[in-house]
Image (cartoon, rainbow, N blue to C red; front, side, top):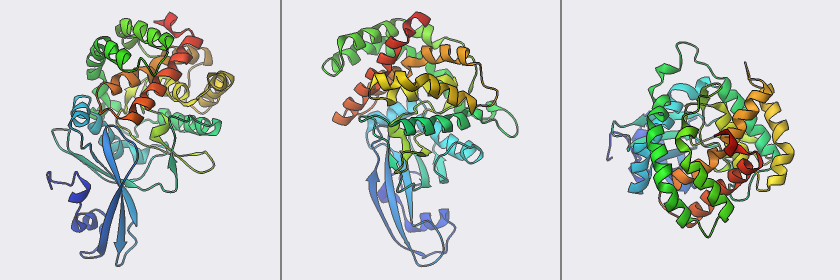
Length: 347
């Protein structure tokens, strides 16, 4: 092992897995793995176990640091691994929002070495960011967003979770990245995005400090990257689990809602048809929810959430063909929403 715990799939030893699942030594007779998912920041593997006895899981999913040094460095800069490990270690089993069960979570001080061993949610399948969402996928995801935003610690308050507040330190860096990096993004995606989309991105980049400095109507734990690639669904389209908690932070719930709706509908007309009703349904499931009009204004303002993630993430992770297509879709759909909702007027 390159750390005190395995960080690559080939480093998993049967004795370590037996220890995690509290089984007898020698009870794990076979351990194999295969890659799963399309993550840009870390690598995930499904492990298959053959047990001589006991009732330990026959499969589990391990999340490991990315093999790509650029992605690992980005994860360290933005504390992405620490946020996800913190979520599973400290909050996940207390919160009503659906996510995989965590068997083991550990992270090194350098925040580039970590391990998560999670419940295998098969046969649930990852959503398709490029194809877009069905209405039932959006509806059931927003119900889980409400569960997440309703969470309050049983004892103490949110300050006890140091990993939850990394985003506060990331704001200045993110503003600088967007302002300086947008010309790079514009050149890279000039053939994938129309000029009006790129133009609104330029206006957003010019006003990024005002956008980031907005005082939220309310704050809660937020997922921060609530899009289809980070959600598992049952065959009937209903949500099975929210995954990829690497941007989990103490933030504005409207950001999650606008991000999810804005990046999910492939057709703007379908989004326009359903978005007001979707938000009213979401608010009906919230505890101490704001009035619709107040939340609607926050929703309009955060229409840029998916666009900002596309710009920021695309500049810091390994470039792949699918990644470029995914980031283009993440930018185009929220930008259309921002145009429809006149979101620039709120900056």
